[in-house]
Image (cartoon, rainbow, N blue to C red; front, side, top):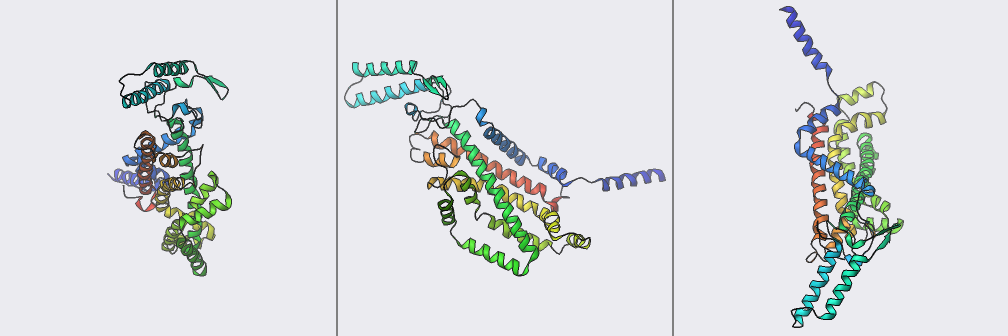
Length: 360
């Protein structure tokens, strides 16, 4: 009986000291959040498609083919068939306005010439001779006859990169500035926070315009222009968290063993703010994508021949009544990604929050 009790106590003791790492606990909690896992899978799929775009069997996203202008989405009809139907429908409408129910001989000859052109015309693209009119555009084409599927995929590369790089830059600056201000305190904290207040008072769009005017309009500058003032909120949040933690017992223990201030801040205190940092970062990625869309709409973002989800939506607004697919497909693709990032961010917040370690 006594041996059984000792073994039981030993097992309970072993179980108590065995423990597990924060990463393992976080992954275990994350797997229980179904919406977060679904969001994670969707984000991974998006990222894979964006990275693999150059080797995917899709058409060029930059090639302009005016004959294929505004062709609707289809899974069965070739571009040539859609061209023929569009021209014939236009001719019949004109003939009806002129009081005729059928095409005249001249118009029929024109259609025959178009049919012959569709069957025989070839062009050289990237050193390869192709029959352009045999293409099938699954998501239709834009106002320059460019494949919408290719432009959405390559646009995803730029949009995701803008969101990811912008969020990383904002987090690095914000965490560093906020942690130093909160830990050091005093005049340093006062100076940093007054600078943050001044930056907050300046119009965001004006700062972006000035930055782009000074350093030029290109993708790299757009990354940093969007992140220019986005770190301010991170700095304030991290500062508040550091202030609440700097007198904690684990911080005092680190000081007592001679840990440097840098080690205390970034090894002990910042990891305890990881929950709020992750949720803010996950929200910043879709926010940056929306910022880029707004800037592209104003002509300050991505310019042709490159594309992003935001620029595709902006370009489609003008003709959305007649060519709805140009707006619908980029908008729905971007919306799904934004929702997935939000679901994933919520799940990561709950999973990595050290204070929820025992809330299982």
